[in-house]
Image 1 (tube, rainbow, N blue to C red):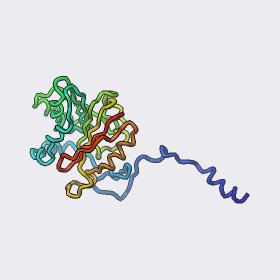
Image 2: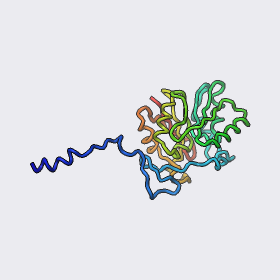
Image 3: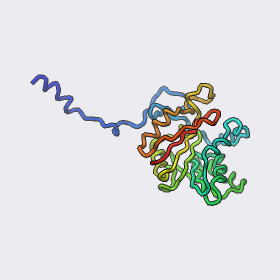
Image 4: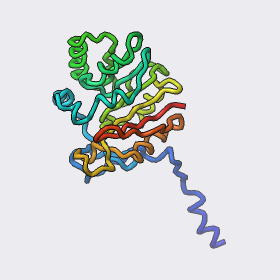
Length: 235
């Protein structure tokens, strides 16, 4: 009887399911370059504001990051529907637009209207007509369901305020067999001189992306001097 009484609190205690646990954690002590919000052990970084858009278009960027190699590595095909998530000033948008012409199109997604205004001017200056500026939110890129062949995220995923919700919406917008190309500075390499919260490891990226059963890691390309190119496909 005594043993049964000791067991009763355990039998009647509420069972906390994994889906009931908080998805995010907030910590008072954190990296000053982060927002104090953590997802799967990773602190989320501050978003780069439109005021710093000039850094995206700096002349030395191609040499430093070898952005030309990234575009080649994506192997985009004419006629593809692609999305530049966190497009900023459109640095990659117009380059991808060239690769998918004549019938392909690019959705340039950003959550800052000021960035999209700048992107629109840049596309006009370059005579690019197959890029559609798209105002998203922190949880939704505002893309049609199963409409995108390839999504590109360059140094932006680590800044998502709501990474789970945003990635869930992205997966919904991706065609079956479509792919997400994730580019992040290598956290594994101490020689990459970037603030810690602005880097990601392959292990961390796989943990977060493969939380969605339909996403599978395909490969990681290390052709860039400082960044990973991690490719995930939708099954």
